[in-house]
Length: 224
Image (tube, rainbow, N blue to C red):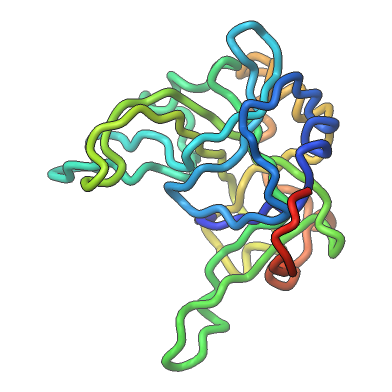
């Protein structure tokens, strides 16, 4: 399960790739690690039909059957069973988004050293880490993410996963994110009907993904 990814790029690069018309995110960090429950930029189609960059919280609403007695909802970051009644409500283009990233992580238990935490393996399209996008969903939601914060209004997102390719499978055999690599795929995901886009829930070919080092931290706080 992908529960960490990195975005090292510029707002202008995301705008150019997705043809986003508006920036409502105010996002300009040169590099950001994104964890569940945190805000991150996504691109969606706004109410007026124009594409926009906004910030949303990573973690879609959890099916109630899995919450049981919890009085808060930590959210679902990765979505695979799109034929379930819970997820079908968000399959239309008005609930779809794309999530920009340059590398993503999967836990790598085989590399764990005695007494140390499980390390992450990082994946990118190539060593230069070009911009790519997860095929995602978003929704407005009112509820409790953290008990101490109480009930609040949120905009939430999550993204599709699929079976792993030959690069990811030796490290994480269950799944990998569904990844979009071209403006044409992004445009189709944001505008097409479900029957026309469901084929994008597929593993990226093995020759389009490599294992990379963890993202480098910025050397200063200069904003791009």
